[in-house]
Image 1 (cartoon, helix red, strand yellow):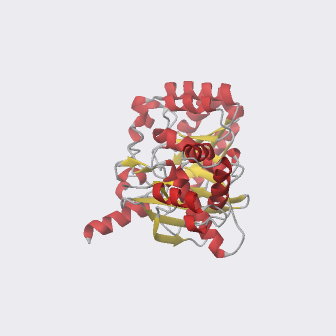
Image 2 (cartoon, helix red, strand yellow):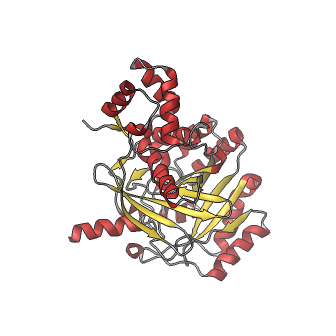
Image 3 (cartoon, rainbow, N blue to C red):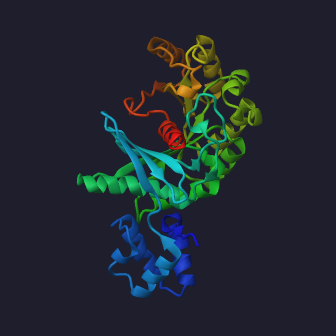
Length: 355
């Protein structure tokens, strides 16, 4: 029998489970403290937890399920981890250093079915969702890596922008947020967490209804349906009109700013015409909009795409600025390693097949 990751339980779920098993409520607080503050690797290290509870936990859960396969370190301090799951599948997690803190980008699915034509994550189709414990453990692996460095550093921000579509794994995503946000554990503030979606409109409504103060980012990448559909097949199911209707609902219910991710593809979506169209698309909601212009990381399998030239990106930015749209250019972290999301995983799987 495969044992569940204990990281997959929220504090409320852990408490309910232990009480159902005849344990006292305070045992959950003890276990939680050992997991997220003392960050033990084995249940037997929980020194003030009674033997009966320890045995109960060992019979039903495991703490660590991820195994580090590869660690790449960039000159700018970015660290990319390739982790092997218990079933042998591979996922990527990235630690990035910013002046405001340490941010971790997590993966939510093994592969991706969204099928964006420029993306390395979608080179391999989705085989399954990650459970909430496997998502939480990515944060714990990175935090334990930092602990081992002896620098008293902590993960302060999270971006859910790794392999997969987070809103296609909605329940596990929400449980993950609850675990990492818990004030008695990692205590990562909701406003320090950003979730990115390719535009699953029906899930944006559901996300708005949760009342979470988590940041929302939308992978837009084109300002009109014809262009967006040509590079993102998800646009067939959720065209821009339907997406923007969901966005309006989210804004009405949350009053929180949305970031629109826009990858700059040379001679594809980087013309002045697209910049003007994008400004018009966001004009009515510009006070709660921010456009993130992202220089493209080339992927061997998507050789038809190249990065827009710097002066073109700056010109695009200026058009948005003149039209009252807040925007900025996000230069990549880890440019000297496998920077594109999913690239390291794809390369490793290819090697395994060759061997």
